[in-house]
Structure formats: structure tokens, C-alpha cells
Image (cartoon, rainbow, N blue to C red):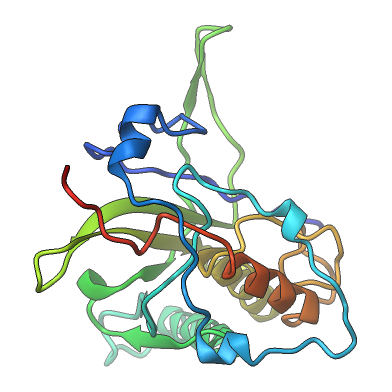
Length: 251
């Protein structure tokens, strides 16, 4: 069975970004935000060299209203949902622990290219990974006057923008990611799905057209590992200018 990976966009309403459906920023909002600038590459990604020159799929990556979804502070902190009652002995707990191990495996895979750290406090996390199906969000169809109910999905990654205050009183335009991973998949597909969605959360906001890449748009019978094309694409993304990670200066 082929399962399509669908990734929804969520922009939290803030005084800066008040139109969640806008694909572009209004001139007034844009003027209050930092100018797009590239950040220095993290050393692990800067050292990456694709000897076979496999190419990339950067043309498939979508830019958000504030630029590419680039992390600028490392390590990126990841909170992973874990069982509450670890003393319980049950089949459900065993399945939960297997799910946790699978996700941790994919975090280690991506950690080779971008510094990542698993944290125990969800409040400080940049990326939160939850063991649950993505919530179904009906959308109102103005043409029919009815709500459209989307199909159930096995995974989804969402982002939100916010202002982060530093100890020096600076206001940094920042973002957070939330990943929903279904608990009902097999071990192999859990690993493949986690690898795929974590790629989105690290900045690959789009899909590859080749099934040999981890960010291919569908599940395949033999899920691929992270490919050279995946990392080539990630590196190009991190070389792009973005408003994220830069200070907002009050006028």
C-alpha cells in the first residue's frame, strides 16, 4: 500500500503574522521584520561533500512567508514523547518503547549532518515529536458552504513563528516544529516516517520526486536511508537568506 505523506502548514497568529493564509507578507509587516540574510553553515554541513555529485531537489522546496525554515542555533533541541508509567509491564508499553527507539534512531541519522540534542523538557524544545495521529482539521469550503473533512494521515509536520527574547533584551524571529507520528505503523515504516518528517522539521519543506530519497513524497516498500541528494538539498537550503534567526529592531 502506498501512503502519501501530507505535511500541513500552521502559522500561529501573532501581531507580526496575522494572516495565516497569506503566501506573501504585506509591505507593512515585511518592513517590521529582519531583512533576509544567510546564516553561517554548521561545521558538519559545511564539511559535507557529495563526491558522486548526485544532485539535489532544491527546486521542489517551498519558501515560507519569512524565508526558508533554517535553524541558526545549535544543537537543535528535540523533545520526544515518552511513556508516562515506565514501571508498567504491558504490550502497549512495549510498543511505545519500540516507537521511541525507532525515532531516536532517525534522530541519530540526521545528527550526523546537523547538531541535534534530545531534551526532557518540552518547553525548551525547538522540535516536538508526538506519538499520535495528526489531528484532523476541517476547512470551510466557501463555494459549497460546507466543511471539507481531509483524509486521515499517518504523519504530519507543522511550524509556527514566534518572537524569542534573549538575555540581552533582543527579539529574535524564531520558529518551532511539531511532528505527529502515528503509533499504528510497523517498525520499518515508523523509522521511515520519522526520518522523512524530521527532514521536513530540519528545513526540507518539500518533497523529492525520486523514491531513492528519504524525502520522497510517498512510502515505498523498501524505505531508503538519507541520501546524498537529501543532504545536498539540505545544504543548499541552509545557504539561502531567511528572516528567521535574526533580530527584530523596533523602529
